[in-house]
Image 1 (cartoon, rainbow, N blue to C red):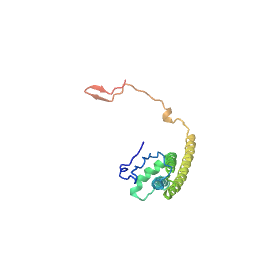
Image 2 (image 1 turned 90 degrees about the horizontal axis):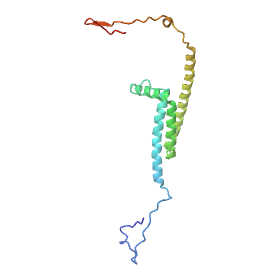
Image 3 (image 1 turned 90 degrees about the vertical axis):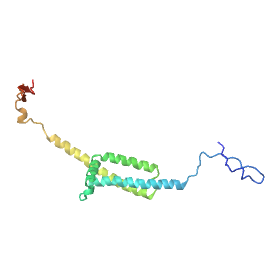
Length: 178
């Protein structure tokens, strides 16, 4: 595709020649550092915010705020979901870190701080996962100790009656079982 500037006739040289049309480059190998830096900078700040959010959930799972009435409901549900779904929280944080790293979010100072926060959150989630697996063994041991021995009530003979009247209405039996 040929590109001509609209004002080429007006800018003709002293001999009256018109500059030759140029073809646009499809691939420019130079990198616009300002655009790459601004995108990475924004990604770094977003990653830091996401990291702080994930760390807040992990921290709440270990130390929920008990004195604040405003945060009491949120902290209960946040810690409950984080403890119960700790492997999934770890998984989404790993995926988010990989996505932000591929976008250049870890090249900036906020991105590196976010990575440190995320690593601390991962350590907390690993402790939570380990504790939950320890509780699994405790539950299995407790259920093994239970034995199903029939009680007196379960061993007592059961009498079955039929034609049970639940009530009378207008001289008729209502709710009779056959």
